[in-house]
Length: 324
Image (cartoon, rainbow, N blue to C red; front, side, top):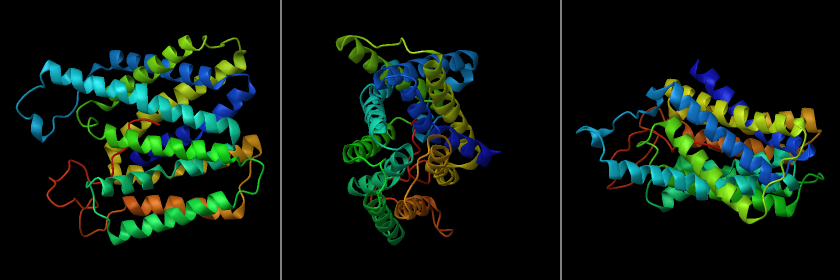
């Protein structure tokens, strides 16, 4: 059941790029797409928390055994979560959907999915992890795969600026994950996601007011695809991921998440007529294999080799993202 939930989550996330393309075809602007997505998702997640108040509670960590946190500390944690959405996730999503305007959904998914490797590199540079031989080999494979994806772009779907925006989205998402790693164990997952969505909706709403508003006059087809993005590729995807993560553990959940760009490429081929060159397919396979290798346990020791002088973390792999 846990594996099925993780695969369901990956499929829902993987469909988002295709839903976005169909929304653009229905006359939806990127600004409207982002604002409606985050606003509707924040409302739905808020309703989930109202119906299931138990989802607001977080399991106490080793440092919380002595009781609840002071109100000021809880306020700071909530402020950081709102900031993650207002700055980090709003920026990442804006770059992602700007790239989607310029390039194929399948190629965008492959470039974006370099972020797990970027997280590993950043964690090593920040002293949170050590660069083992297994990680080094995975990084070389991922770098080669990314190069193949870019050099093998022979179709009309490739756009240099789009590729740059997609990679910028991956870099921004890397920073978002590293910062969220400082609060992800201090807030319940659904509450954290609701705060992130609220912060992103606030930023995008303010930007819309400053730039003259948002055109919401598109027809029912546009609203249908926006609802699909908000409900299927945001709320259902996140809740399924958290439920699967609870049952399988972070290593298995991370490996199963590599199904996401596969779903994007398959749906884009079936619905949008997009194709990938053989070199791009090989490069994408290398990237996905490298992500899986980075998350696999060695079988004899914990997967996460801690840096010298650092206490043992509460989990055994790289931080799982709270949202996408």
